[in-house]
Every structure is written in C-alpha cells, then in structure tokens.
Image 1 (cartoon, rainbow, N blue to C red):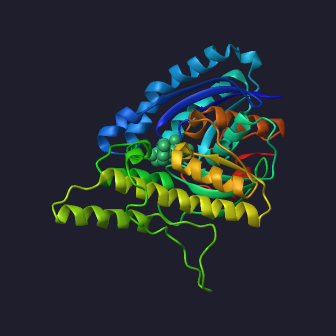
Image 2 (spheres, rainbow, N blue to C red; image 1 turned 30 degrees about the horizontal axis):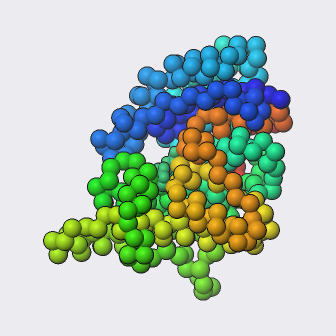
Length: 347
Ligand code: KG4
Ligand code: ZN
C-alpha cells in the first residue's frame, strides 16, 4: 500500500496531503478565496504568485501533521492537468524538485481523476464500475469509471460549468464570490417555484435532445433578463426567489441527466464530486431520485468535494501501486480529456 505526498495547485487552493492508500494522514489547504474576492473571480497571475508564497509552508505542514519522514513516502503525486498553467507549474516544480532531491517517483495526476478519487477516501471499499457526477467551477461531467486510469465521458456541459453558472448568477444578484455558497444560503429564504426557468437542453441533429449533456448559458441569460426587467420597472429584484428558482433548475437538470445515465448504463452507484456537490438542493434532489430508482449515491464530505490534495494523493497511490510513474519532463496542460490520463505515465 503506497504512501504518497501530493501537491495540488491547479486553481486557487494551495494544497498538500499525505495519503496511505485510501486513508488520509494529513490534508492541508491554503485557500485564496479572500484574495480573489475583490476581483469577483480567480485572477490567474495572482493565483500563481500566491501559490509560490504558500507552497513550502503547506508542504511542511502536510508532512508534519502526517508524522511521516521521507523514508515512509513512496512517491510524490502532483496535479499536472487540466488547470491554470501558471498555477499548475508552481506545484509541478515543487513536486519535481522534491522527487529529485529525495529519489522518489513522480506521479502526475489528472485533476478530474483526483475528484473521482475523493469518493474512495470516503468509501475505501468502493470499486468500479460506477458513475461519477463531477460538478465544479470548471467542469460538469458524467464519467463512467471503469478502472483506475480508464474513464469514459458520457455527458458534459456544452458551455458554462455548473459552478461557473452559480458564480455568474451570484454576480448578477450582487451576492459576491464564490457564488455557490451565497446562492445556497439566500435561496433558503426564497420560493423555488417563483420563476420557471429553462433547463438548457441540447438538441440533436436527428431530433430530440442529448440525454446527458447540459448547457447553462441560456439559464444564466434568462436570469439576466429577469433581473433587467425588474430593474427597468424600478422594482426591487426578489433576490431570494430568483436564487431559489435558479438553484432548483440546475439541481433538477443535473439530477435528471445523472439518474438517466446511471439507469441506461446499468450503473447502480453514483459518486458525486466537485465544489457544487456541496449544494443542499442538488443533494436533496439527487438522493430522493436515486432512492426512488434503487440507486446508491455517495457524497464525499464538503472538504473533499472542493479542491484538495488528499484526492490527488489517493489517485497517485492507485497509479503507483500499478507501477505507473511520470517522467521528470512532465509538463502542465490547461486542457486534457480524462480519457487520456494514461498519457501522463511511462508504463
Ligand atoms: O471543485 P471546486 O472547489 O473548484 C474547481 O475545481 O472549480 O469548485 C468550486 C465551485 C465554485 O464555482 C463554487 O461557487 C461552487 O463550486 N460551489 C457551490 C457550492 N459550494 C461551492 N455551488 C453550489 N452550491 C454550493 N453550496
Ligand atoms: Zn477541482
């Protein structure tokens, strides 16, 4: 059972963790949310600089909290794709330096494969095949997990990711950044039936709609029109009602696609990951619908849904156990389909 130190710097969290197979020994995250909040979103150059500031302390804290010394570390995992290239390079450079210095293998990890592995940390006995609904600020995907390194994307967003839609709608409603938690909170005081909003279906050339793909840009525009209409008529925008209606529309759209996908592919377990998995109404809708269809749905705790290095370490340990390691020439990639994860390894 490999013990792996992992580093994650793909976006705005500087994170390091030590995981022994599927058990967390330490999990440190230095969040940059407060730094990016005045800009209303992540500023890539600011994120890279902040990673440089924080990374040494975060790695030191992960090692000391895990109470391991270098002899007990079998490999160093690092997120190498996808993400902000400048931000990824900070983590990659740190990981390569430590790998060389301590003569440890380097294991590049695909960020989405990391999110999938958060479910193994919560449920160490979970085994493929299962369906993963991955909903974060950058991704909205339905992924069939066949084995470690083997994934099939069955559905995805054609435009904005679910978290991005939450962030943009929150900005329209002056709710601040990040938008998801703010909408979740204020929606508790709103009527989710107040405004019927479009779910965003993808038409197929042969007629009908794509069963698993989604689109959130039309929904965002519908919210914008609603807000503009109220402002034009000098009416106060009913923020809580708009937030609740938007949130329910997203939750229903994701739930419908996920349950259909699980049923059509004969997958009885659904693992959810990414920051939007924290959403209370998505959890409610998905759990209720899964129960109706006798499917199992797994939500990792919120600190494992949002970006962290424990999930990267877990994926890294699985690959290391299979003899998958990366060359020290490994680069950072802003985009990479999850079906290509094995390109990260020299097997
Ligand atoms: O997975 P994550 O931490 O980072 C990325 O890899 O993108 O996800 C961040 C996203 C943000 O868009 C944030 O608004 C959203 O997750 N989020 C939520 C909630 N908490 C975080 N969205 C809806 N409801 C929430 N409670
Ligand atoms: Zn993420």
